[in-house]
Length: 150
Image (cartoon, rainbow, N blue to C red; front, top):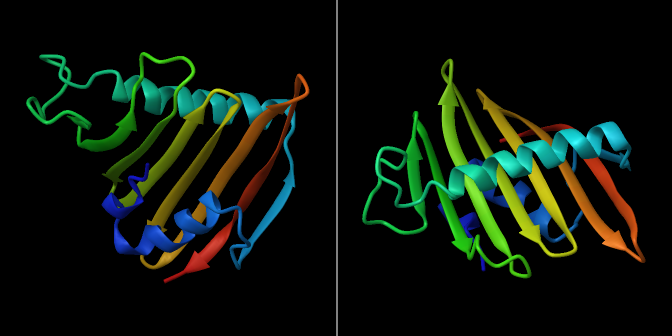
C-alpha cells in the first residue's frame, strides 16, 4: 500500500524516509508529548474525514473515481478501507494556499498512526511529523520537525 507516488517530486523522498523511519537531514526528533499527540491526531482524523467523503454527491468533486476525493481546492488520494477498524488507510492531501504548495501524508493503522505535513515555500520545505503507536497499552512515539531544501 503506497500513495507516495502521487506526491509531487519534491515531497516524495522526505515522505518515503519518514515512512521508513530513516534520518531526514535538516530535521530533529523529540519524544511525543500529550499536546503534540492531540494536535497530530486531530490532523490525521481530519484527513481520514476527507477520505470518508469519497463518492458522496455534493462532497466529492471526483465522482466515479474511488480513492480520489477533490474538494475546496484540495486533492486526496487514499488506499485502504475506512470501514474496517482493524485495517489500514494510507492517504495524501495535495493543495495550495496563498501560492504555497503543501502536502500531508497520513497512515492510520490499528496500533497507531503516522502523520507528516510538508510545506514548500520556494524550495524551502518545512516538515512536521508524528509517529505514534500503542505498545503494551502505552502511547509511544516521536515528533519530527525541520527544514530541507530542494
